[in-house]
Length: 97
Image: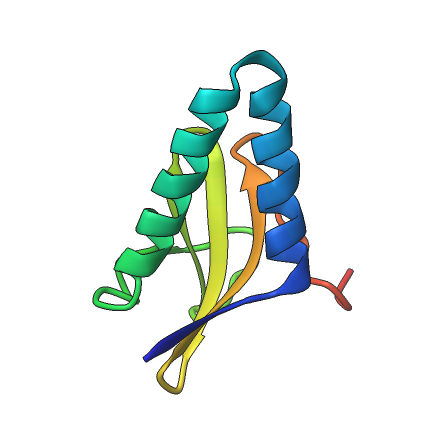
């Protein structure tokens, strides 16, 4: 089992961390460390997330971390982190309308 971060997921993690750091740099570091710990947990429990409702596809799941949706695809022994979204924002699968 392995975890693959897409460039978009890494970009979103950086954006969220930078936003938190504007007010509290140490909290941003804690947030980022906890984010990576949440994602690493998927190595043991890849099916622990729920299906993303707006995607309507069983292989696209999410786990929640505060007000962040960690959206990933699980299949064939790997977890691919697709993106991070604020919990109020809908997820749209690229290439589909």
